[in-house]
Image (cartoon, rainbow, N blue to C red; front, side):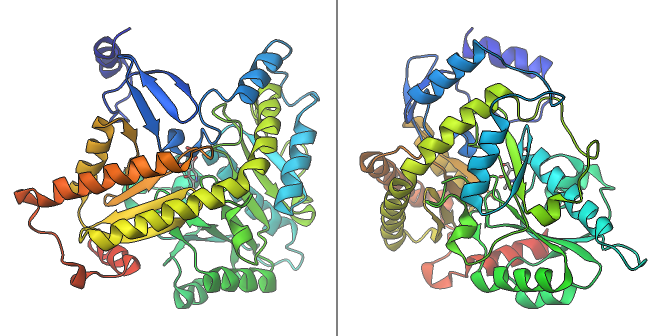
Length: 428
Ligand SMILES: Cc1ncc(COP(=O)(O)O)c(C=O)c1O
């Protein structure tokens, strides 16, 4: 089928939830994707952080073939060979004790929220009202289901669906005073994306994380991290929180876990897990044999690639910093490992640069209006980074020079990224 006929049918038959780029991809290998016209594209987005091993990785392909020929689904009413082994691997690398498997990021997050409420109820021994309030962060993104939406700190995602789950208070991200002020004995969980992904690649500050850890430890609330985008090797460590000296009570993962097959997980401590009993939570598809068999292979490969991700991440970051020196329009360079971002000074410029790169066969993505987000596969090489930097350089020169873009702020006017986000929020 051609791009034209597919897009015509989709326009008629699908809910209009996506604005797709006009490309029909038909195959992929390594860091490249090929479209229906036979054109090759360098993938610096990995299907939003999913294809961490690149496309059609031989070990993943072999695992899928092998397992698809044996057993695809049995439901969680029975045992299969892979959930226990996958849980063993995930608990070993996370420092946590137990896992629950599901199908997506948002579903992992729903499980974490339910766990926080259930744990609060189970530990409420004194007859008072159990802890119930959830502190979530402004600018965060946790998914599209109702609980995840209720804790997503971006009004544009929540507004069309109110009223949402009650009990959520938003804290200014990385604002120690605001966290301290909003925390009290009624809080059952503090929820943090260790690096806010959709919100523009904004890492949590060490002091903020440490305060959240101290507050939760002291009161018995849970510290819950969303590492759906930044976890599982993306930053060059198994988990982004491993760059800090803080261990969460619960962490959620998904995106790269089964390399494109739907699989999410929450990981937690023995103490927290003890509040769950058969029937309290579950899923039909989650943690099936096919996805789990693939995830085991992914984790074996991920371990081998951590050093490479750190090295290439550093190489990429330094190159982006060098671009920053050359281009007035760059407001900030942020990121860790192979989760990097360039913040530009206008949504129009960010759009134009992303569009131009796509025309040149490079896939990146614009998030939070002005932020160019890079989530390449862990297997990229320096030459791929060089190609992207060269294309960015040219696209920034070309688009920043166009006459209609005369409203760019001078570098001297640069505000810090958090200050600008605050300003934007105040106007939202
Ligand atoms: C940090 C974070 N949490 C949750 C989600 C939701 O994951 P999913 O789209 O798999 O439901 C995403 C997806 O982008 C995410 O980046």
